[in-house]
Image 1: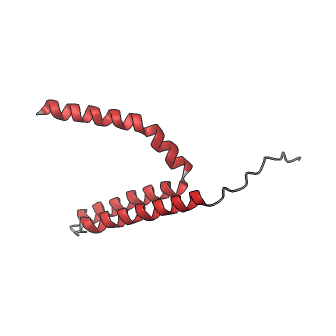
Image 2: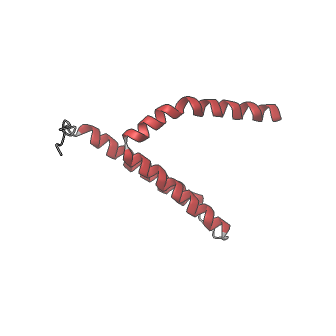
Image 3: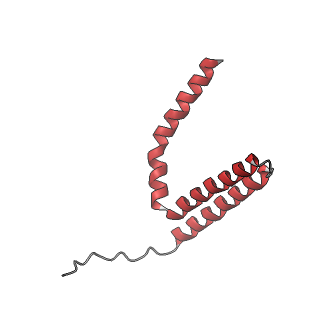
Length: 96
């Protein structure tokens, strides 16, 4: 079944290449999502480190924490969209 595995990897890489630009733009537009993603990496890293020291952390706890964080972030983004946009100031050159 090596052919199926090769095809799956090629398709997955193609999907990642196609969606990378949109995801990158979204993350750069919303810095709180960037912090959330970094905290997920930290959470997974701590979980893997604990597993390396033979300390079991139930995966349900990790997944629940991640799902709850995503839910809160979605609510924050939705609420932020409803509020008025901040006033954009023009750049004024500073004389030396």
